[in-house]
Image: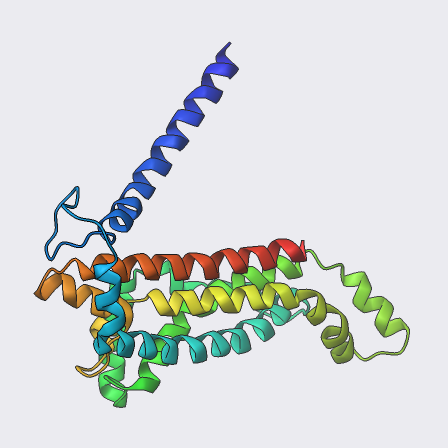
Length: 260
């Protein structure tokens, strides 16, 4: 009887948490279908007015373009850094490899606001504040831990005996890593790169602290719109952003499951 009660209580709590998390998302999606020029719930009229305004405004297109310009190199750099690091941690006897792993996760452990303030001082000294290169480097620091976690978890499930068998057949360690382990890790590497892309695309704190006046990503454009002039158009932008990032994240999870 007590087990059944705990089971039911767990379902109720889980349903309550999911409802609280999804309620703002659903409310935003509903408001995006309003044809009103102001916020009202429920909307007085329905339609695609907000989406038409988004598609016809060059400012939003520019913000989306700049978000892609940042997210793509961040994803590539994150994979280029995290994958060799994962091999050093999981397939070598490198001294201090556990400390390297802990340091690699610092980007998601340190509060983002404290990280941004610290980078502000560093970038001001190096002349990187308000530059494209600086933003790419800052976002890469945040994205590397995501890729590192995904790849190291996948590598732990790849039997080391496969590499040993390849080396016993005459392959070098490097060829065994590239020809066997890396090929088996490829779906997880792609999934990690996709998640790094999403991490950079959705980031707003770093662009606020480290970006210049002419550097605006989509999340920053949404924030500025909410701060300086509340318009129902941001509901359509937010809905599109949530749908896009969710689709990308689901694709990444699907790749990881396919690997398993």
